[in-house]
Image (cartoon, rainbow, N blue to C red; front, side):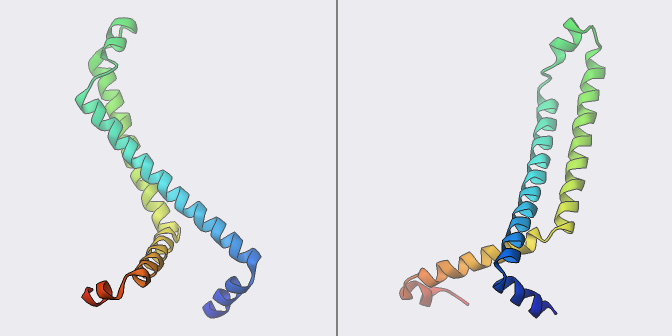
Amino acid sequence: MRRDYEHHLAECSRCSARQKFHRSLDVSLSVLTALSVFFSVFALAVLMHIKPLEHVAFNILGLDTFDVYHMLVSAAIAGVCFSVIAFALVMMATPAPTYLSGIATERARLLEERLPDALKSLRLR
């Protein structure tokens, strides 16, 4: 059945275009969740090393800086946890990792075909 499915995708331009569109959505979703993890960790690192809202919290709002700082750190840790969970769910639910590894393998094969014969003979198999 898989062979019939792949044969249909190779012949039908409409279904092939739809599959490419959905694979690009999968890859975009995985990139966005990875960026979310990165920026959440970055925000946590900034909060750990710099207390940018200390002046605003203490002087303008009249809040205790210790409470505000811990509230922001707690929000950043929750953001990191949520982002990691979302990234793991995206990687498990979509075929993006398989799709990307297939693209990488195909590109590597194309690059290998372009290599001169002298370099091909040096390559270990």
